[in-house]
Image 1 (tube, helix red, strand yellow):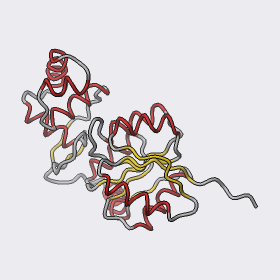
Image 2 (cartoon, helix red, strand yellow):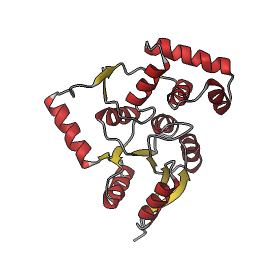
Image 3 (cartoon, one colour):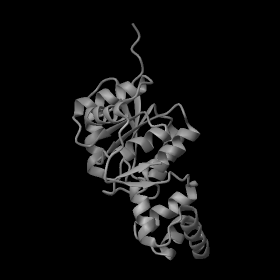
Image 4 (cartoon, helix red, strand yellow):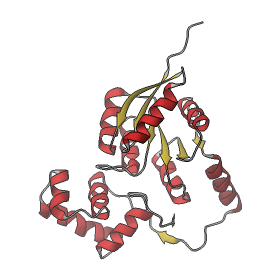
Length: 228
């Protein structure tokens, strides 16, 4: 009987030590092959389009382009590629957001090696896969029709790719000149994007933009949120 080809995996994670650990874990499996590693979201998108892996294991908090925006771009440009989120955070808002973006699954970084391998195999088979703690909590909340108490409610406004890039850098503390240099645009254009973001989101200061970016997963943080 002919052996099926190995599952081609791309790792998108900005910490080299974590990437190396993930590669070693996955390459212990004869049916999985790591074909590339991306240290930031922009490279994750570019490498996905060039290499066409079956599965991208994606962190959320990454430089250049965050994991949520990278997931959106991958799903739009290469919908056959499955994105498996691997994040330190497991708030329901992150889970709901990646589901909206078309990710196939969500694992917390505390997960076991066995679970990671199982998740890669399942999403490669066109199935979804979530860490057991997330799956139980998510199922219970939706079954009972409950919203979490004591959390911020925010409108789920759709941002363009460029708006997300600018907002991410604002939330990370970037000055206008630094943002302009990183994105290859003028300082005046950065200021226009910032002003447009404030009007679009009805937020009127940098601190508010930063809180919004954290709450919606554009950058990682600890502000819980539900979407209207």
